[in-house]
Image (cartoon, rainbow, N blue to C red):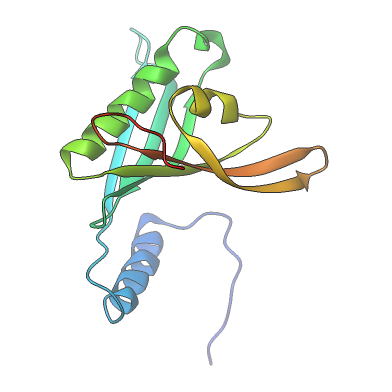
Length: 147
């Protein structure tokens, strides 16, 4: 008999199996989407992790920025911009022409807008008084913003 169990965190193997299953199904409908992981981390001289950006890109020219964080002690010093620039630059090297992500209104929406991202979707009051926003950006050499 099949059973469904709750998991707080998937193992790497479980996550890979799910992604592979999605990819296998998707290939019956579209060309191979591919999934290429990217991550850049920020560490102090002692090796302490103080920030990072995690994402992936596909075979269709899109970078997905999944997670981004900079320690509060380093915010406003340009490290966030450097991390975003690094992942975007690597994505461009691998053929990406666009980037997309989500952010809450209390998080980094304005930060992303200053870096050329534009909001293309918003769920107001996703949490009372806050919105969840979907943003996108053209990664073309001109750095134009998608409309």
